Image (tube, rainbow, N blue to C red; front, side, top):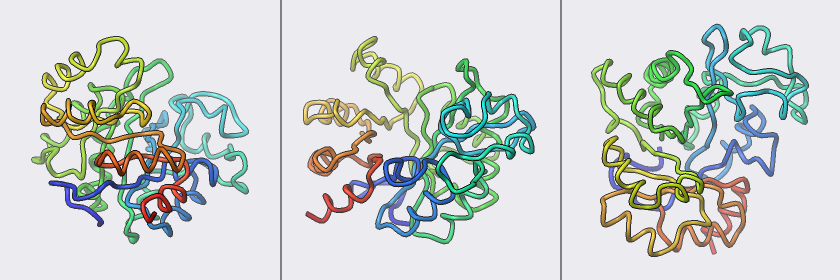
Length: 260
C-alpha cells in the first residue's frame, strides 16, 4: 500500500478505468497492465446484476462497451456473461472479486466508484455488498470509495457502521462533484452539502481546479482530489496544485509528468 488513510503525503495517480486510452476500459487486460505500472491507484466502477453479483463496468447499460444491449440490473450474472467487451480479445465484464484478485498482491490500491441504475435509482443492498467484499479480502484500508451521489456515500457509511466500522478505515471517502453541480449551487452550496453529510473529501474535474479553489476548500478543512486529468499538462497541474489524487485515462503520461 502506497499511502496511509490519514495525511496522504503526495499527489497520487489513479489509472482511470484501468487506463481507458491505453486498453479497453474496466477489463481484466486493463487492470493487469495497470497493476504493472508505477501508479498508486486504479479507478473503476461497480454495478449490481439482477441476482446481486457485483460487476465492474462504467455504464449502467452494456450497449457502449459490449456486443450486447440492456441494463446490468436486468441481467442475471450468467446472462451477462454471454456478452463480450469490445476490443478485449473475448473478455466478459469482470466482477469486483476478480478485480480485487488482480490488485490485492500488487502495490496499486483501489479507487472504487459506487454507481446507480440507469434511472439514477440505487441498487438495493449494493453498498453493504461492497463493504462485505472489501472486508472479506482485507482491502478496506486500501480503498478510496467515491460517488457522484452523496446518498450512496451516506449508505456506505451506514453499512460500515452496521459492521462496527467507520469511514476513517478507508484510504479515502470522496464526493465526486460534476461541473453541472458547481454551476447549479456554486462552491458555497457544495461546501454546505458536504457539511451536512459529514464528508470532508471532494473530487473536482481537473480543469475546474485552480489555486483559489484549493485554498477555498482547504480553509473549510476539505481535501481536494481531481478527475479527468488526461494530458501531460493536466497531470502537471494536479502535481503543482498538490491535489490528494487524480484520475487519468493516460497513466503513462501522468507517470512521466511526475518524474519530470
